[in-house]
Amino acid sequence: MRGLIFQKNNNSRDVPDFSSSLPEPKLAKDHVLVGVHACAINHADLSPYFGGVTRGFPRVTGMDICGEILSVGKDVDHWSEGDQVLVDPVLSCGHCPDCSESRERDCPEFGLLGMSQDGGHAEQVAVPAQNLHRVPRGVSLVEAAAIPLAFTTAWRLLQSRARVSGEETVLVAGASGAVGCAAVQVAKLAGCRVFALTSTEWKAQELKSLGASRVFLSSEDDWQDQVLKATGRRGVDVIVDPVGPVLWDSFLPLLAARGRLMSCGTLGGSRADLDLKLVQDHELSIHGVSPGGRKELSRVLALISLGRFRVVVDRQLPFQRASEAYELLETKGIFGKIVLTP
Ligand SMILES: [Zn+2]
Image (tube, rainbow, N blue to C red; front, side):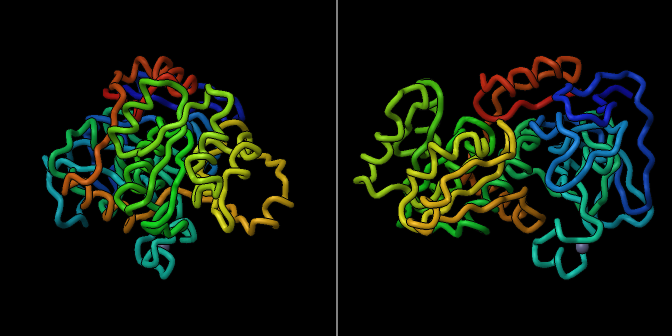
């Protein structure tokens, strides 16, 4: 079986290796075997830790999986061979009090596909039947693979945690990434005034088409002043930050009193050096956000079926071209998600 495998347990940013001799997945009684049509890439694929989970190894990577059921375990009801499915990457027991409150990461059995169990960067993957969802109407299998992590993170961040209201202004940083593209749309649907921060003019046009009312270019020296001016120097209520503390010196002064910085990435490192005086004086808060759970994914999929969100796929590439895909992801030369196909 062909696919990508994370071989080493180290801190490097190595791309998982392509292999044409991966072992066939074993089918447990409550699992289904999925023939993978598409599986997106994430920065997390390159890291030995993500979302509170340490990766086992060797491990097939790939968290955002879409495909067709090839066979079902003997205890599986409601799903059949040939069903097209999208897979929730969050593993949990599904019935404890934490799972029922959408706090899967507090479940004793919490894990992630591609981290604690083999993921979807392979021709086939075995996944728990309780993680399956139907592919939303109007979305291709490749587009469906771009949904789970990006949209559940954006939904959890803005709806479950920041609890944005329609009167608020939201600045989405790193807006051309997959989480950013989703966050612009989630904030817009909530009625917020949406600002986006990106690097180049062509991405700015795309972000406006997703619902951003103003787009600021980080390449312009005075972009922070432009943001403040656009709010009458009041500042923004919420900042969506998929990048990390390297930019907090730029972000914190842009927050209005009692503003919230919502952090869901650590691309430039996770250590923060911040001006606590600013945080105290303006009663700011900083929230850490991890990917959403089952209820959040169901909600997002329902809205996508209704045509409320556009799934943005930059391009699809075959597994053999994974190095090129991750290089594009790391150099930020893309808009939206990169999806790999067998
Ligand atoms: Zn549980």
